[in-house]
Image (cartoon, rainbow, N blue to C red):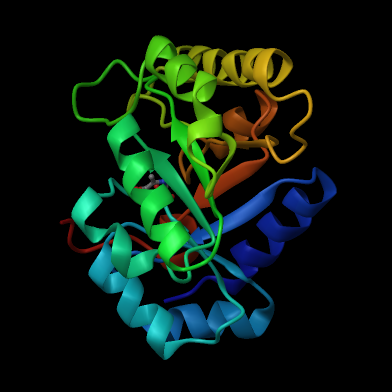
Length: 223
Ligand SMILES: *Cc1c(COP(=O)(O)O)cnc(C)c1O
């Protein structure tokens, strides 16, 4: 069930701060997405390729679809024609495949590099060194635009730790921007924060927040 009151509150709060609200609709039915769409929401996030392609086919074409999960190279081709922004780039090889599929579709695909900030083995992402390496060679990928960084904090009640992790991501974002993207205004997105930690994320410089359960209620299955 969609919580329109919460959506309205978040939207107003985020608009004032120039933060993009991405409604994370994974595992939720297309009817829930349509309901938020009717209220005015256009940015939606999904984690699974098959689920995303089915929803893309069924829903209005002016939705901005964000792929926020772990993306396998062999599945890039299914979302390359329409995806708005791919958040979770966690290895350099994946970028080569996205570049190739973007070229096939005559388009440039926007991506965010996932920076590993959490103290958890379960999360994906690249180190500072790996991201720097990718960024140095960005000219080799003409059909990709690197638009910023994405990260997930540790799943912990220790908010000081979460704050520190978000701060690390924002600092790295600012540093990369100064070093490698002075002439690339599109390098402007810092995607961090979810239902449980978005306030801290925004306080630490996030301008793109991915909210699922606060808007759609809890999820009953995970993949
Ligand atoms: C599921 C998911 C979210 C949303 O999580 P909530 O806690 O439900 O807000 C955000 N980001 C990523 C990468 C996710 O997989």
